[in-house]
Image (cartoon, rainbow, N blue to C red; front, side, top):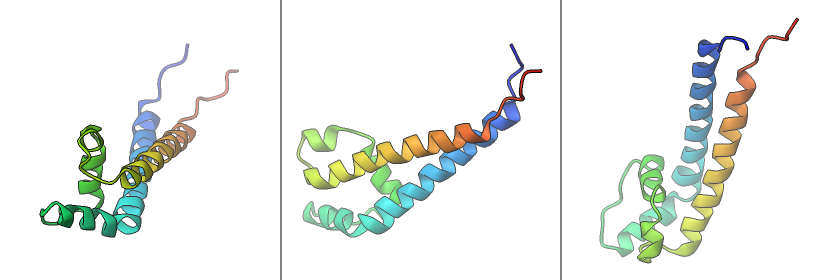
Length: 103
């Protein structure tokens, strides 16, 4: 068994995190940002500001769906796209980690 290349593991994790953060910004900040703000206004709450950060915090829990806090379509879009971005981040991060060929 070969030794783990920790530098590549860390770089792969950072790259995966970067991909996920970029996707979160694009989806929740640009694509769904107006809908998130409209949902917050309908609840008489001020917009949360951070765009992707605020949306991520809301999507991280199933409670908003269970108590009908936000529209189902908004939560569904966010969850499906989150699954896609996590898989993409994992694949790209794993691509960066390469074991040397066994001789």
